[in-house]
Amino acid sequence: MAIFTYDQLYKFTHDMLIKIGCPEVHAQIGAEVLLSADMRGVDSHGVARLSGYVRLWEKGRINTNPNIRIVHESPSTAVVDGDGGLGLVVAPYAMNVAIEKASKAGTGWVSVRNSNHYGIAGYHAMMALDHDMIGISLTNASPLVSPTFSKERLLGTNPISVAIPADQEPPFVADMATTTAANGKLEILQRKGKDAPEGWIQDKEGLPTTSANGVKDGGALLPLGGDREHGSHKGYALGSIVDIFSAVLSGANYGPWVPPFVAFLEPDPNPVGEGIGHFFGAMRVDAFRPADEFKSHMDNWIRRFRSAKPTPGNEKVLIPGDPERELEEERRKDGIPLLDPVVKDLTELGEKFGVKF
Image (tube, rainbow, N blue to C red; front, side):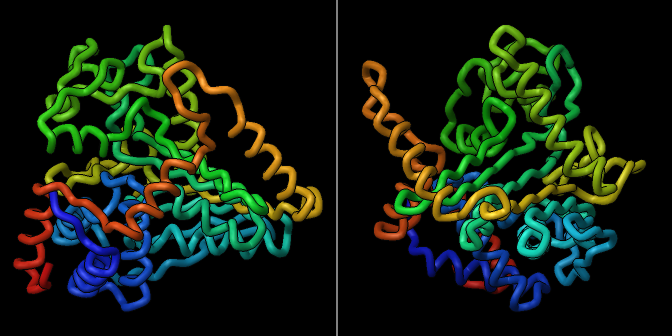
């Protein structure tokens, strides 16, 4: 493992995005979104993904200079076409549209088609916080998840993020996959050579497995809950809602037709839509009650939950967003750790494109 500063990783990511044809402003946004994952401890979605984006570009599946545009709108809603661009760039554009609509109409809702993997859901939801708005960010993803009782992989890890502003307290930021674990967590276990916990994966016959390579070997991730007994039907329903809001609403691909993130798998030759889909919401707090009043009550909510008596062996009750924020403070001070396979991958990527890592 090696430690890098934010600036080192930002510069490398930015320069790599320029190399593959991103305009300066897109390279800046893309690098910022990618690095926000590393800073918040979502290592699976940070610079470790950079070579994956580059491989998709090499296959002609990412347009690095897209014409991102609104193709349909009402005063409070819009559909954005990402023109095959990096989701890291398309998503902030769409979230800004939602924020702009909310500033005028009270709420703004944007569904996106023809995009790609957009990094961490939380980054986009948190964009609303500076505007005294609640932010919502959803995306569908490559089909790696079997619905409850299914052997087939029909859904993605389909995350949900909701960011809610407070006053003196840090914001409430929920950011979670609708599966028991995201695929990135498996990638980390594979790099470390460890098994997965029970309830994360089923094998190709639909039986439980703890192999971290279970999905690679034809199995599937399981919806949140793991099995019916532990509520997987609820995780399946949540993942389905994300898929429908992100793609059926926008005209993106949904279910098993969502294009895979890995470049070595070809997209379905008969797609039902365009690219990957996202969904964003922005809600002006003062469209419901005075913002100061709301935020002081959010402080009260957060403090009461934080002061809850912890169960034996646990130090404290956390608020969604606490672990990521604590890690961000730590990494800003001490640097960002990268596993050796990631360092090797980025070094080779840099050498190939003449960008120093």
